[in-house]
Length: 131
Image 1: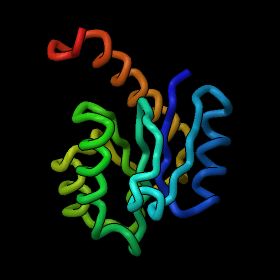
Image 2: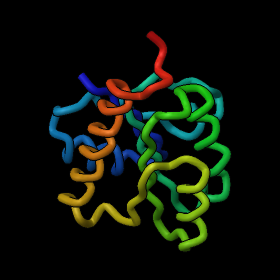
Image 3: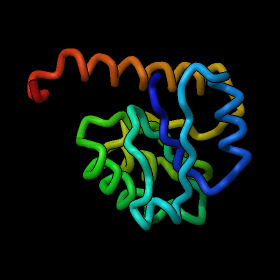
Image 4: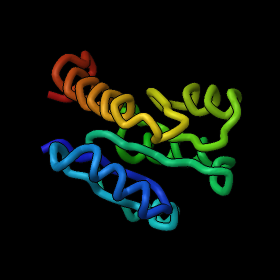
Protein backbone atom coordinates (compact mmCIF):
# COMPACT_ATOMS: atom_id res chain seq x y z
CA UNK A 1 0.00 0.00 0.00
CA UNK A 2 1.25 3.48 -0.88
CA UNK A 3 2.37 5.42 2.20
CA UNK A 4 1.60 9.14 2.36
CA UNK A 5 3.37 11.22 4.98
CA UNK A 6 1.29 14.22 6.01
CA UNK A 7 3.27 16.91 7.80
CA UNK A 8 0.92 19.27 9.61
CA UNK A 9 0.37 20.62 13.09
CA UNK A 10 -3.41 20.52 12.72
CA UNK A 11 -5.58 17.51 13.49
CA UNK A 12 -8.35 18.92 11.28
CA UNK A 13 -6.03 18.69 8.25
CA UNK A 14 -5.23 15.06 9.10
CA UNK A 15 -8.93 14.23 9.54
CA UNK A 16 -9.85 15.96 6.28
CA UNK A 17 -7.07 14.12 4.46
CA UNK A 18 -8.10 10.80 5.97
CA UNK A 19 -11.66 11.43 4.81
CA UNK A 20 -10.48 12.32 1.29
CA UNK A 21 -8.37 9.22 0.71
CA UNK A 22 -10.88 6.88 2.39
CA UNK A 23 -8.38 4.11 3.17
CA UNK A 24 -7.04 3.97 -0.39
CA UNK A 25 -3.56 4.86 0.87
CA UNK A 26 -1.82 4.52 4.23
CA UNK A 27 -1.80 7.99 5.77
CA UNK A 28 0.93 8.75 8.33
CA UNK A 29 0.64 11.97 10.34
CA UNK A 30 3.74 13.84 11.48
CA UNK A 31 3.89 17.21 13.21
CA UNK A 32 6.58 19.80 12.52
CA UNK A 33 7.98 19.15 16.00
CA UNK A 34 8.65 15.54 14.98
CA UNK A 35 10.04 16.77 11.67
CA UNK A 36 12.46 19.05 13.54
CA UNK A 37 13.60 16.05 15.58
CA UNK A 38 13.89 13.96 12.39
CA UNK A 39 11.43 11.42 13.81
CA UNK A 40 9.33 10.57 10.80
CA UNK A 41 9.03 7.39 8.76
CA UNK A 42 9.78 6.76 5.12
CA UNK A 43 6.94 7.31 2.69
CA UNK A 44 6.16 7.19 -1.02
CA UNK A 45 4.58 10.66 -1.19
CA UNK A 46 4.78 13.65 1.17
CA UNK A 47 2.14 16.31 1.76
CA UNK A 48 3.28 19.35 3.70
CA UNK A 49 0.81 21.86 5.17
CA UNK A 50 2.10 25.39 5.68
CA UNK A 51 0.32 28.25 7.38
CA UNK A 52 1.48 31.74 8.33
CA UNK A 53 3.22 30.40 11.46
CA UNK A 54 5.55 27.95 9.74
CA UNK A 55 5.77 29.24 6.18
CA UNK A 56 9.19 30.83 6.56
CA UNK A 57 10.85 27.49 7.46
CA UNK A 58 9.15 25.69 4.58
CA UNK A 59 12.12 25.70 2.23
CA UNK A 60 14.40 24.26 4.92
CA UNK A 61 11.91 21.47 5.66
CA UNK A 62 11.47 20.57 1.99
CA UNK A 63 15.26 20.23 1.67
CA UNK A 64 15.35 18.10 4.84
CA UNK A 65 12.62 15.74 3.54
CA UNK A 66 14.34 15.40 0.17
CA UNK A 67 17.66 14.76 1.88
CA UNK A 68 16.25 11.96 3.98
CA UNK A 69 13.64 10.39 1.68
CA UNK A 70 15.38 11.02 -1.62
CA UNK A 71 15.58 13.72 -4.23
CA UNK A 72 12.75 12.19 -6.25
CA UNK A 73 10.16 11.99 -3.46
CA UNK A 74 6.99 13.71 -4.71
CA UNK A 75 6.00 16.54 -2.38
CA UNK A 76 2.64 18.29 -2.50
CA UNK A 77 2.44 21.50 -0.47
CA UNK A 78 -0.72 23.01 0.93
CA UNK A 79 0.01 26.69 1.43
CA UNK A 80 -2.56 28.69 3.36
CA UNK A 81 -2.06 32.43 3.05
CA UNK A 82 1.15 32.25 1.04
CA UNK A 83 2.14 34.73 -1.63
CA UNK A 84 2.91 33.79 -5.24
CA UNK A 85 6.60 34.19 -4.31
CA UNK A 86 6.21 31.67 -1.45
CA UNK A 87 4.63 29.18 -3.86
CA UNK A 88 7.32 29.73 -6.48
CA UNK A 89 10.11 29.32 -3.91
CA UNK A 90 8.70 26.01 -2.66
CA UNK A 91 8.30 24.68 -6.20
CA UNK A 92 11.82 25.79 -7.03
CA UNK A 93 13.15 24.08 -3.88
CA UNK A 94 11.62 20.73 -4.78
CA UNK A 95 7.89 20.57 -4.19
CA UNK A 96 6.19 18.97 -7.21
CA UNK A 97 2.85 20.75 -6.88
CA UNK A 98 0.79 22.92 -4.56
CA UNK A 99 -2.71 23.81 -3.40
CA UNK A 100 -3.81 26.93 -1.62
CA UNK A 101 -6.95 25.54 0.03
CA UNK A 102 -8.73 22.32 0.92
CA UNK A 103 -12.08 23.75 -0.14
CA UNK A 104 -12.14 21.78 -3.41
CA UNK A 105 -11.93 18.10 -2.36
CA UNK A 106 -12.02 16.75 -5.92
CA UNK A 107 -9.02 18.86 -6.88
CA UNK A 108 -7.12 17.75 -3.79
CA UNK A 109 -7.82 14.06 -4.42
CA UNK A 110 -6.71 14.49 -8.05
CA UNK A 111 -3.42 16.06 -6.96
CA UNK A 112 -2.79 13.23 -4.48
CA UNK A 113 -3.47 10.65 -7.18
CA UNK A 114 -1.11 12.52 -9.51
CA UNK A 115 1.65 12.38 -6.86
CA UNK A 116 1.09 8.64 -6.33
CA UNK A 117 1.18 8.01 -10.09
CA UNK A 118 4.34 10.07 -10.45
CA UNK A 119 5.97 8.10 -7.63
CA UNK A 120 5.04 4.82 -9.35
CA UNK A 121 6.42 6.10 -12.67
CA UNK A 122 9.71 7.19 -11.12
CA UNK A 123 10.20 3.87 -9.34
CA UNK A 124 9.56 1.97 -12.55
CA UNK A 125 11.35 4.07 -15.17
CA UNK A 126 13.92 6.33 -13.48
CA UNK A 127 17.23 5.75 -15.28
CA UNK A 128 19.44 6.27 -12.21
CA UNK A 129 17.54 3.89 -9.91
CA UNK A 130 19.53 1.32 -8.02
CA UNK A 131 19.20 -2.22 -9.34
